[in-house]
Length: 78
Image (cartoon, rainbow, N blue to C red):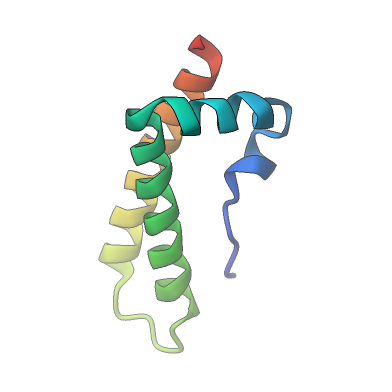
């Protein structure tokens, strides 16, 4: 099942803080960029008819979780 992992949906109570950090914190903005790129890559892999990239898909998913955890820590700590 192909499912987009939108950060605003995942952190609905932090949207304002999310946008402030994105605009004012270059490291946070880079995390968002990395997360979005990985999410797009995962969506593309999941959308393939014949998925021969299970290892790549799992690697991307793990990396996305790590980045999302960093984003969550930033949102909680700021």
